[in-house]
Image (cartoon, rainbow, N blue to C red):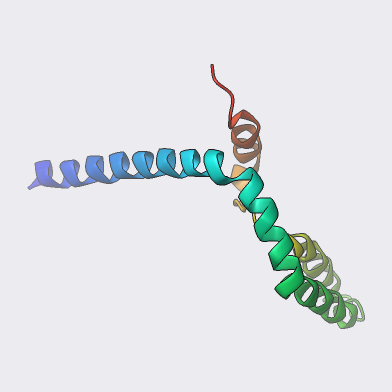
Length: 109
């Protein structure tokens, strides 16, 4: 029984690393130009409305002391809602690792 549990854990780890490698290759091949084209289409179709919605909803949040941090967070969401493609969203504890990983994408060592 314990051997089967270990083999399942190892298979998950292998599948996770293989999937991450495949996604990195796809991002390298199609990330730049397709993200730009997709962002232009997104801004025309839905990006402006979402950005305006974030601005409009942040204004009432700034009226109370409790809502100020929420209003600031709402204003930070404008970047992602306006041009979402090509962005990487990571937890704040992985921020330093994600920045280093994004700067190393495309480099051959």
